[in-house]
Length: 113
Length: 112
Image 1 (cartoon, rainbow over the protein chains, first blue to last red):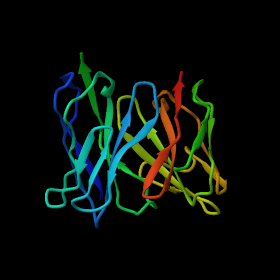
Image 2: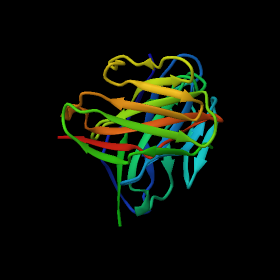
Image 3: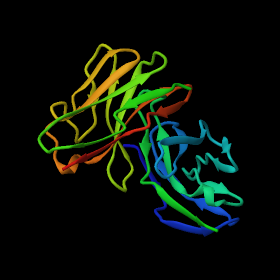
C-alpha cells in the first residue's frame, strides 16, 4: 500500500535559517505529491504540489521537487521566518482524486527570533 | 478551488452519546472524504462518500461506529456513535478538485 515517511520534529531553527524537511514515499503508479501546512489553531492548507516527475512546486518561498528516482519530495525554504512556525504534512494521491490522500506524520517546525 | 463549510467547529460530548458533523460544499463534487486527526498525530482517512451509494470505509473503521450520509452532491454528514474518550480528535471533511484537495476547517471533538 501507499505510505509517506517524513522527518519528525520538532524542528527548531533560528529566523533566516535554511529549511529542509525530508519526505519520501512508497506508492503504486505515478502519484501526485503535496505539502500541506497547519498553522496553530487553523485548518489544513495546501502549500504546494507536484503532479509528475521533475516538477517543482513552489509557494510563499517554499519549494519541493518531485524526484521519482529517489521517491522523494523534500520541502525547502531559503530563509525562514517566525510566521512559518507550523506543522507541515507531506501527502500523496495515487488515485487521481478518487482515493483521498495518504499523509505523513507531520513535522512541527518552530522558528525562533 | 471549492469552499467547504464544516460544523460544528468544536464540541464537548458525554461518553455513550453521538455527534453528527456536517459539511457543505459550495459546488457539486463527486467524492467527499472524511479524515480523523488524533491529538498530535497525522490525518487518517476514515471513508470516502459517493453520492447515491454507501460510503467506502478504510481498514479499522466501520459503518456502525462512523455512519456517513451523502444525500446530494454538495453535502455530507459523519456521525461518531457511542463515543468514548478515545474518539477525542479533530474530524475533517475534504473534497478533491482540479488536482488538489480542499479541507474543511475541522471539528474538534472532546469526549468526557
